[in-house]
Picture 1 (spheres, rainbow, N blue to C red):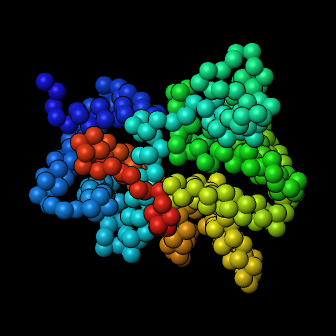
Picture 2: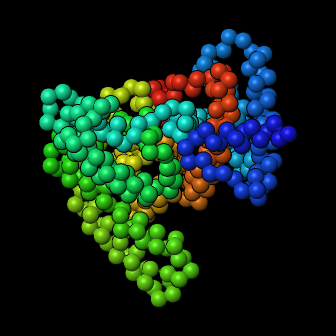
Picture 3: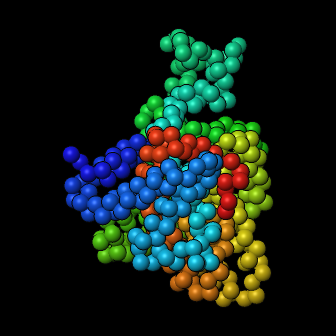
Length: 383
């Protein structure tokens, strides 16, 4: 008979992107899972004792237990404990991200196939009767104009998504029939809004999308053969060339058009209240509106080149921090090394939190303790 804590390992199968642990990995993580299961049992016992908790209170109680347990996983994590001035904003950021990642990756919520998504949102209006490409999705005529056209559009979208998602640090592949998650649907539908933008904004959007392509390619080459790239200096030459192309593309993007584009995207995001929080987070992560405008304003206030360099160095160190309040907290450290340390430590900490939380939350959802149903409204994007 398997130990009880093995149930938590099995919970990982209920999420997209699940990768089965090897025997060696499972043995290495055994202390972690045992400790997590002990926290889980403590949570269940406390929930059963406390009566009349709202879903929000229940969810916060569960997460608080998981958060403080994660603090014990690393000797440096106590910097985010409740006695730290960083605690409140780190807690809120981790809480928000945990709920977003749960809803994004859980297999309990059915997504759409790419064809269903296109049928529902495409500007070709496949789902509108009496339009050129209309057809009945449930009973399509295989030789109809619309059915033939949507298959080509589906192929184009699949290739485009693969190119984009493959450039990200983590690419969670989903099954064909659930390729488009519910939480991503509104975000991807913006691609059809682009057709109605003026030429300047459309060019700006394309320019942003292509901005880092050469640098990403150079970095991927380094990852494939890091020991060989510097022998003849060819990698450094490629990287310098990639930077020159990046700089050339950047100069073609007008700041005014960038801000206008961001306003259009924000207007689109506001139309979906259900997933407003997660969409506004993705927006900041992708286009960094708050961070960029804050950095530009700080650079304009600089009195000398030394101050400018200091701001730019911190911008690089904080590139992975997309929560405005946390960005300000970490940037407030006087030393660049302290800022970089906190940013890197936070990224490690939040991964531990998300991984731990999803396993326990999945069990609680199945048992009916918590629906995890309201994490995406506006007030949930606390940071």
